[in-house]
Image 1 (cartoon, chains in turn cyan, brown, yellow, purple):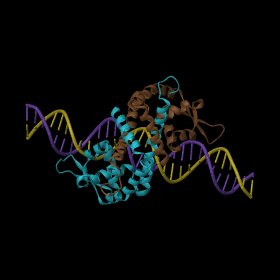
Image 2 (image 1 turned 30 degrees about the horizontal axis):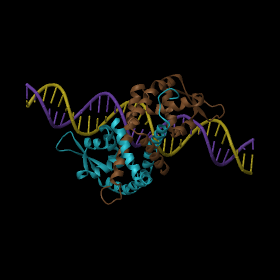
Image 3 (image 1 turned 180 degrees about the vertical axis):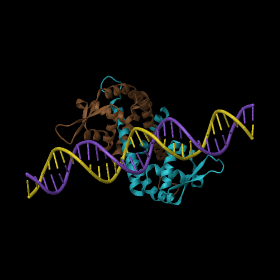
Image 4 (image 1 turned 90 degrees about the horizontal axis):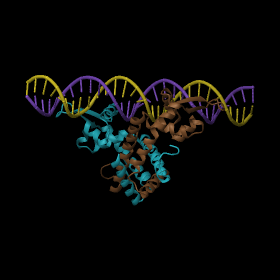
Length: 150
Length: 150
DNA sequence: GCGGAATAGTTGATGCTTCACCTATGTTGG
DNA sequence: CCAACATAGGTGAAGCATCAACTATTCCGC
């Protein structure tokens, strides 16, 4: 890390540090904002958003896991906790006896509807408020490029 | 999130999804690569890098926490675990009786030196391998802009 | 139909992060 | 000097993420 290794150029290093700093501070800020506003975690929010967009406000566990890019186990644990807080419910699946639905219940919908506008506004303001159209296009291009190489 | 709210434009939405996807997959990939290569976590690696760059291969807990942008408690817990694995050691501070040093020990240095070249190469390849100089400059500019607004 | 493979989902253990609180040492004003 | 306060650091509990193992159901070839 010090001398002879083919590390990054100065410009790359600045960009990398920017990425790292943003990658730790932006999620933290989002989480804090959401938590203070509505008592939801960022993860709770993601789950609720997907359920609210799903037909019948319910989704099969595996579909939900795929949509969120979470492991099944993680989702199962998280749903257990959200269930305990009354935000979602589990429901069995008649078509497939192994399956289970996660269902958005009233309290969960209310929490989401209370949190969403402020959250959306915050993202629009803080993340995109300072970016030009070119910046936004560049960001899409850059993230796409890196994603395709992972 | 669905209809009337002033959510993001299409271009912003694509950029935002790219950001979110990258923000979850890149750290995961980095972690996996590092873990498979050397048994270190990304966090272990960060700690070891900072210690290796510090004078005397040691740092005060608070300085280290600030450098990593970690909470003191988190660092303390993490150091405890790394100490148990023989990667670092604690040392008391003669100047300030409350203080403590975290010291890089031989096994930690060896682990770092084993991991660093491959890790660096991976980052250079995967993250920057597909980016033009303009992309890199844009990334630095964009991250800086957002960071300044958080 | 029936036995084995595949699939859906859950659970328990372990490590990590955060929060609130605690101890011990240092600092400062009277 | 010493009481009040600030600072450095550690600890325990609770939530979260990952991994391996487990149960229950369905599918598939015979």
